[in-house]
Amino acid sequence: MGEPARLRADKLNVGFNRVPVLADLSFDIPDGQTTVIVGPNACGKSTLLRSLARLERVGTGQVILDGKSIHAQASKSVAKQLAILPQTPTAPEGLRVRDLVLRGRTPHQSPLRQWSADDAQAIENALRLTGLIDHADRPLDTLSGGQRQRAWIAMALAQDTGILLLDEPTTYLDLTHQIELLTLVQKLNAETGRTVAMVLHDINLAARFADQIVALKDGKVRYQGSPDDVITAEIMQDIFGLNCTVIRSPIHDHPLVIPA
Amino acid sequence: MIREPALRIGRYAFLLNRRAIIVGITLAVLALAFAMIATISGRYPTSPRTLWAALTGNADTVARMIVIDHRLPRILTAIGAGAAFGMAGAMFQTMLRNPLASPDVIGFSAGASCGALAALIMFGTAFVLPGALIGALLTALTVIGLAWRQGIQPYRLILVGIGASLTLSALADLMMSRLDVLTAAEMAKWLIGTLNARNWADVTLVWAGLVILMPVALWLQFALSRMAMDDDLVTGLGLALSPLRLAVTFIGVALVALAVSVAGPLPFVAFVSGPIARRLVKGARPALLSAALIGALVTLLADTAARAVPMVHLPAGVFTAVIGAPVLMWLLVVQFNKGKI
Image (tube, rainbow over all chains, first blue to last red; front, side):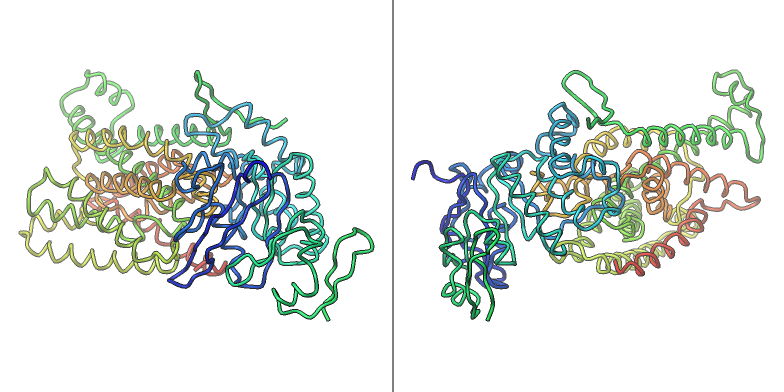
């Protein structure tokens, strides 16, 4: 292995009200790849993603971004390297798509520098990549669920960071829109070389869209590797307590979990 | 190509919103026109020509006394206090993400009045503003602190705030019982909110305060428009949430204390200004300047209405309450139906 990964957790301990959620957790987010974090409910996968984005108070251990503890760095400079889309983000009523995406530019701006040519370019790119350029002037609350989620992704894209963290980006979307959104994320990873890490509930979607899967249980990383390595009947039994058969997807050539 | 109209000065660039500018200019013209009407009307009607003569120093003594010593300070104080309330209201409503979270609904104004009254009784008139400042700040920190459960819980905030408001009003009544009857009668009007008998010292105080506080508030508007989203997003975008919250609270409280110390609590001015401004400007902006102008207009209207009632010195606060209370009820119903309370 060459360079260490830009973003990694080092012996991370996070707890709520003295109940440990993450215990001595260490792992790397491989640069330029799509990593999907999976695991049963309450295994700490969302807490892990949020900790990686400095949204949780960390007990001991640390999150390392570019060789330095993330908490030791100015929040604004972290925001230029790493964008996070939380699970159910909220925006005030009546906010237009372009204004939402503009807010993604916040770390590159200040009260005295609210607009630049870079801002215009980044917003334009984000709207084009997410297919929302024709909806820029519409209020967010008039969009469909799938479009709205793409608008949030556009905001995170406009932040123009090398690392993008998504916490269950497919929540509340129907299957068509889940596939559409994850295809978009795959395209972003392929075309812009961004490192993507996301939490997904659906193991078969994870198998299809991940370069690497991280399987969590009881606040620890149990398995980490390619979908082929991690998605096996034994591991599914161990992680989810699920009796299943794993076959190969006849269409997309990835492991497919068929519950018993 | 995505373009936003921006004002560039050297390496600085400010976003301009056409709608906000049009609304702002319209409101400013309205306020100016209304201020002029208010200056020439009253029990001793004066013509626009006399107003001009008084302003340029060419009027007779009576006209000058009425216009310069009497009406003008009252009107300028009304505009200043109203603007301070309007801006403070919009700041808290945006930061706490709820139109009910206005300083006059959740007890900050009552805290300012109480502090001002206590300072007045104990130390004299020179200490009214610091007293109001301390009273409002303590109330704000207590109410927000008590309503905090990993973020503001709207119904907790409103219940705690209304509780604080009632407690502080009772405390003010208690303090009033220590005053002699005449002073107590004057203070009772001030506690409703009045602009009666303002002088140039009040005008200087409120406008000097605005000159200091308004630029800071407008500087905070950049962060406030982001703080209207959720906390995780604010942190994710690289803003320092806690220091910003403290800064907004402090500036908002200072504006409330400033307005209360020259005009009393003037119920609901802060409360109605923000939502009206947001509806006019649209696009989910904090619209602090528009809210300030609405606050000024509402206060001016209420005070002119109060002046128009013959024989009694009715406090302007009576009229702001008449306008504001139905709006409060309407908003409570709307929010309840939306499941936000």
